Amino acid sequence: MSLPSSFVERLAELAKTSTPFVSVTMVEAVGSTPQDAGSKMLVSLEGLVTGTVGGGKVEYMAIQHAQTMLAGPSAGPGQELVAWNLQTDVGMTCGGLVKFFFETYNHSNWRVAVFGAGHVAGAVVHCLGQLDCDVQCIDPRRDWLDKVADHTRLRKICVDVPSSVVDQLPDDTFVVCMTMGHATDRPILEEIFRQRRCFPFLGVIGSKSKRGVLKRELIAAGVSEQQASSFHCPIGLPLGTNQPGEIAISVAAQLIQMRDSWRAGRWAVPPGTGMISSLR
Image 1: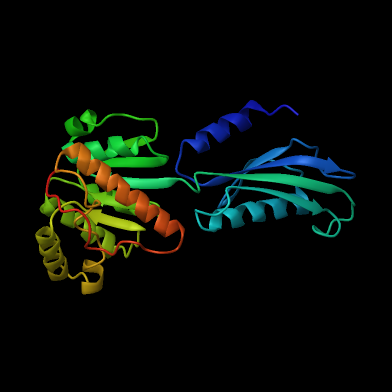
Image 2: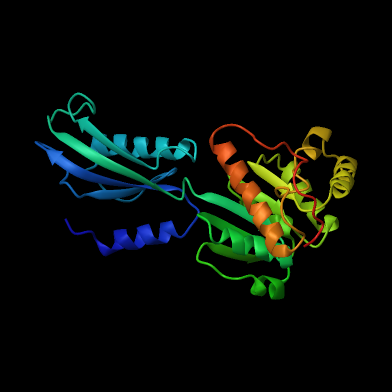
């Protein structure tokens, strides 16, 4: 079965976004079935996006299955092959058998948001560009963003108020603050805590003394002590020098470590530990 160009175009469009979705393909149809093998549809958390696998009960059940996959943990299985008897499993009068292949997109991706586009932030973004992750680099300075090396999974965001991007970040984003200083890091932290966001990783580049200053100022601004203690600073594993490239490797290594711990449902490094670095 040849696919309509509109389906392929819609899949390509969705694949470029951060919206999780599932491609559902009927890979086998035996007996009396509502659609032929090769039929496809795209499903998001909101429901059917485009395409069809036959309509009625079987399509409704397939949509529900796809949405269940999307609602599960991002480290869950990205592909599933499911076989249903239309009479006993779906409740249809016809006695056919169908097999569906479900494939998730933009669901198990690793997302990292880097606030800042200075020397170290740019090095971190470049380092992450070699990994399997989607990166956002947020900074109010267009000239500094332009200096950050481009890669296919990097999105540069130039905005006057970086904290305004917080509500656009998916819940599974790893957040790193590497702005011009603690005075520009703090508003981002304040907005995160004001919105009661709980990201898998929230880190700020700097020293232990900077962490102490940020904590005091956050509490003075009305943030609870528990929230004000919940970010990592210093960040990075204790290795290398204070050269931007080596700091970037240490930060990327810690992010990988924390990602693996988060996906496994455990934490390996408590907030407040890591490599001391005040460079940007």
